[in-house]
Amino acid sequence: MFGTRKLGRTSSQRKAMLRAMTTYLFENGKIETTFTRAKEIQPVAEKMITLGKKNTLASYRQAMGYITKEDVAKKLFSEVAPKYADRNGGYTRVTRIGPRRGDAAEMAVIELV
Image 1 (tube, rainbow, N blue to C red):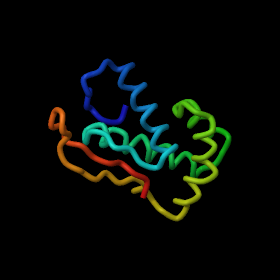
Image 2 (cartoon, rainbow, N blue to C red; image 1 turned 180 degrees about the vertical axis):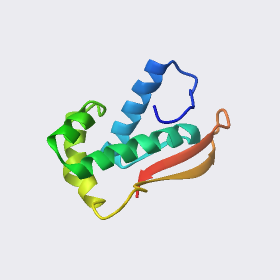
Image 3 (cartoon, rainbow, N blue to C red; image 1 turned 135 degrees about the vertical axis):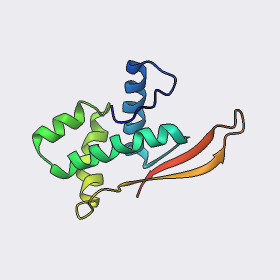
């Protein structure tokens, strides 16, 4: 795993949550979540886009091992990654949007730049 934040979950639950949120990010372009979750998703999403930029069968299979939907992986390799062909990192942005109303958790939006 990338970070050291446990996010109040077991390792298998945490991995499943990160996989699902990364898939959702590539599907929709942005996610509204807590700040700590957004900071955990960021390096995973950056690595997936870097795999998409390589555009080889091996990198596609590696991405499919992490992304949960096949059509999202195809979108990553055909639309998202070519958009960042001339960019060296920094594909995502995390913006704080203030506290959540129910429990005052710090909320953020993670989006593709």
